[in-house]
Image (cartoon, rainbow, N blue to C red):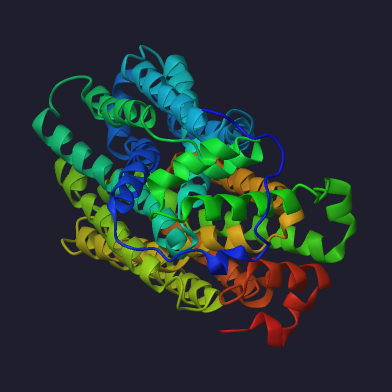
Length: 490
C-alpha cells in the first residue's frame, strides 16, 4: 500500500461539521468487532486487578505470606502499572497503538503463567510486576485507540465500552473465584486455577489484534495518509472516509505547530500549575475512596465481618454486579449531568457509607447474626456510589481539563500518581487491617472522603458543555476558577 508523506490538501480546521452523516451499514458491525477485540485489554485489566481478592487467602497459606508480604504481592502489580502507564503510552506513540496492544497481550499471558507456576514469593512478585506493566499500558493505550478509531458522533459511547469491560472483568474474577473456591477449595493450589483463567482472554486479545487495523490518526501522524484512508473505509459509511482523513490531517498539521510545554513552563504559570494539581488531586482522591481495598481484599473484609470462607467468596460477587450496574448508569448520565455535581454527590455518599460501615462494625459485635449482612449491604452501597458517580467522571474529567500543549504531560502525571496511590494502599492495607481492624480503616476512609468532598467542591471546575478549545482558553486565562464560570452548567 502506498503512503503519502507530509500534509495532504486540507479541508479546513472545522471540516468535521461538513462530514457526511453516519448511516446504517456493515461498517458499524466492523467497528463493533474492533472495539470488542480492543476492550479485551480492559477485561484483562479488571480481572487481573481483582482476581487476587479470592486467590490471596489460599496463596498466603501455601507461600507462607505475612501481612506485609501479602501487601507486596497485591501492590507489585500496581507499582508495575504505574510504570506501564507511562511507558505504554510512549511506546504506542512510537510503534503504533496496535503493536503496543499486541505486546501488552503477550505480557498479560507471560505474566499470568509466571504467577500460576510461581514456587516462591519472589517469583510471584515478578509475575505480578509483568501483569502490572500490561495493566498500566492497557489503562492508557486502549482508551486512546478506541477514541482515535471512533466517529466523533459516538466517541463517548464507544470509548466508554472500555470502562464497562473493566468492571465486567472484575465481576468475572469474583464469579470465577466463587466457583473455583467452592468446587476445588479443599485441594492445594486452588489459587493457581483462579489465576490461570486470565490466559484465555490474553490469547483472544493477541489473535484478535492481528486482524485489527491501526489507528488512522496514528497513521496520518506518521505520514501514512493512504493507509489511513483504507482503514477508515472499513470503519465509516461510503463517501466519508477520505473527507474524515483530510480533516484529521488538517488537525494533525495544525497540532504539529504547537510546542509542548515542559515542567519549568508549567510550574512557573500559576494557572497551569493549579490545573495540574487539580488533576493529581482527582486521581489521588479516587484511589483514597477505598474502592480498590474492596476490589483487592473484599473477601478478607467480608470474612472479618462474619462470613465463613465459602460464603464470603459467593457474596463477594454482589459488589461486582453493582459495579457493572453503576458503570451503565454513569455512561448514560455522563453527557447530561454536571461533572461537579456528580463529584459532590459521589463523595458525599462514599463518606456516609464509610461512616455507616465503621458504625455497624462497632454496634454489631462479632457473632451477631446481622453483622455480616449489614456490612455486606453497606459495602455494596459504597461500590454502587463509587461506580455511578466517581469512577467514570474522574477519567472523563482528566481527559478534558488539560490544555492541548500539556495534555500528555498532565494526563500522564495524574495517572502515574493515581497508580502509585493505588499501589501504596494495596501494599499497606493488610497491615492496616491487622492493626486497627475494619472499624478503624473505614472511619479513616470517611475522613479522607470528607476532605475529598471539600476539595472537589472548592477546586474542581465544571467541564461539561464546553469544547476543549473553550476549556483551554478558560484554564490558561484563569477564568475557569471564577465562581460563575466554575459553576457553569452545574
